[in-house]
Length: 630
Image 1 (cartoon, rainbow, N blue to C red):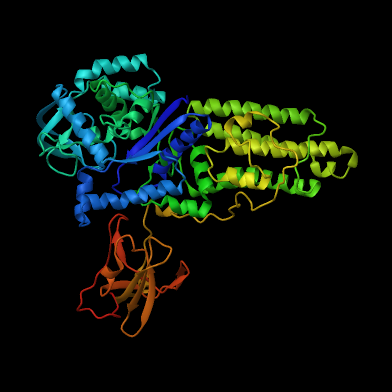
Image 2: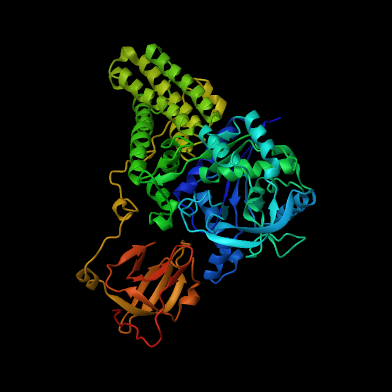
């Protein structure tokens, strides 16, 4: 029977589009899940979305849609992003699903009936974006310690969960399970900053908004975020249902992988909830750092540095992005993200080291042995050193992955890549090929290089999802790609036909940074002369239709009174085509034409919004089309 492994990421709050920092956690979890599957584990990998709360309700109202419509739209984008990143999650839980909501109501009732939840009145400082209550001592300069935003005084009837009742039991558990919170710095922070000062009972219901799971025995209350959100880890497994086979099989979780900003909820509130439910605690909570920009700035639209992660994938390839996220940052620490760093990593490690190793090897086998992998001839000291490097690296990869040191695992794989490139320089196969008496040495070199590349391709599978297959295609490999096959040198069959293909990774000679560093911290000032060059005109939309093959673009036919133009605009997410027909809008009329999806666009329609809510600028009917905007 396979050993089970249950890994989770946080369920993401769909108040806006996810950025590259969010991808960091999920790509890391995916690498761990893929590694465990390759090692023979029966893996359950869960991710999802936390969709209730006041912030969602407020944003939906501003967008003039229902909260459910609002989250449905954003969640579809999150699912697509995970698909674009090749995330191999086994389930995706939404807190608006019946399977989740029904169990949350049962949990709330159970805790109430056993006396762990009671009704009272709450008065305290509340941060709406973080969905968190804070005491005066926890505030920093009177503001939320997590996001730095203003808090407001909230007073309302609420139900409370008795965190304080379980404080001593939690402290005892942490003492007896020193690896429960990792890294060590996170554990010290939780104990010293939150547990030792004393735990206050937790507000677990709200009455000032209604977008949430109703308390079934007191429906004017909705279940507040943390009791709702945290329980996803067991509701997704069928806890408290007739179909609880997954719960019996996979709980307790082996690893909750979370951002450092929510370690507190996962290592204090969640364990106490489980204790109250008489359930075992997860084996480990690992709080990773943030991916930041400019050495400290968080990523987000409010910081002016948001770029859709798909843009990085399209520009640099999926595996280049995955490799950077997993290799650049020691897992657990904050990491600095720049496109220049991504390009440098891709060029040095992927294009130069790995790509050239494969390209040179296949080319030489084609040139010297008609494209067939030769049998091993004479072996010597260089071959022994290469084998030793491989065996040592495989042990290091496994040890590092078991310790969640993903960056070090990749570093160990690259020690093989580096040693193989050095092996070429040491053996000089081009010189061996000129001497018929040394053909057996040349055979050995070619076999060793091809077999080393097979082993590298096997080891890369948890991290780079497209590259191993591309390597197998060029090396002619159809078997011996299981994880354990990497531990046996010599499985590549003699006579295997290789075939040179495209470069694994294209070298990127010019970095076209999507968000210019100098524009992040300050807006560029322009003169009135510069503004005069931009011609804004009123245009009436005559026709609108979706662009085939795109889920973002609309093709518009507009009238400027004396002429008609075609404009391609990224408005499909925000408008149905028929909603725009007849509207008078503002366009940039003297923009140089450009092609989008092969369609010429003769201008830009002005719109405003934050990416979640976008509206075109509508002009009164009294203003004639073709008029200049002053």
